[in-house]
Every structure is written in C-alpha cells, then in structure tokens.
Image 1 (cartoon, rainbow, N blue to C red):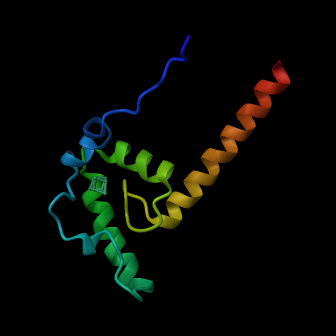
Image 2 (tube, rainbow, N blue to C red):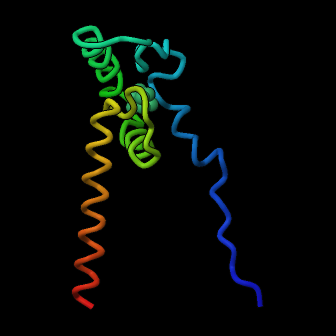
Amino acid sequence: MSKPVRLPEPVTTTWEWQMHGLCRGMDSAVFFHPEGERGHKRAAREEQAKRVCAQCPVLQRCREYAVTAGEPYGVWGGMSAPERMVAESVTERMLAESIQDNRAIG
Ligand code: SF4
C-alpha cells in the first residue's frame, strides 16, 4: 500500500496575495536600498516604504512570508531586513521553548 502524498499548494494560491500588494507597480527602489545607501537616507527611504505597507491589505501575509522565507533584503510587510531577523529569531526561540515544554509535559 502506498503512502499518501501531500502535494504542494498550487503556485497561484501561494503567491496570489502579491497581486493585492500596494507596492505592485511601484518603483522597487522605494523598498530595496541602492548600493552603499546608509544612515539618514536609508532610514528615510525605509520609512517611506513602511508608510505604503501600513496601508496595504496584505501586510500580514507579506510579513509572514518574508519572516518565514528569511528574505534578506528590502522592506516587506512593513519591516526592514534587520527587524525581520529579530522577529525570526524570537519566533524560533518561542517554537523551541514550546517543543521543550511539550516534551516535559509528556
Ligand atoms: S506589505 Fe508592503 S511590501 Fe508587502 S505587499 Fe504590501 S506594500 Fe508590498
């Protein structure tokens, strides 16, 4: 008897949320820093991107994707790359603690 196979979600379902992003069609330079950008200029550009994200109907889905996928660059879901790294490490720590708690319980 063969084992049941779990097929991947259809690609259109997985990525459909991107069709509703407010950044769709915008200049990607608002969301991704150019080479060598630092300091106040970078902070100002990221704030501009975050203002767009704050109005976006798929913000939560975008953020979940970017944190889970470990997107290394740009503003996604209203978060910069360093902010997502912190969120990812907190999530991983909480998951590890939850697994330890469940093992302790039985
Ligand atoms: S949350 Fe921001 S980066 Fe994500 S789809 Fe919306 S506008 Fe684009």
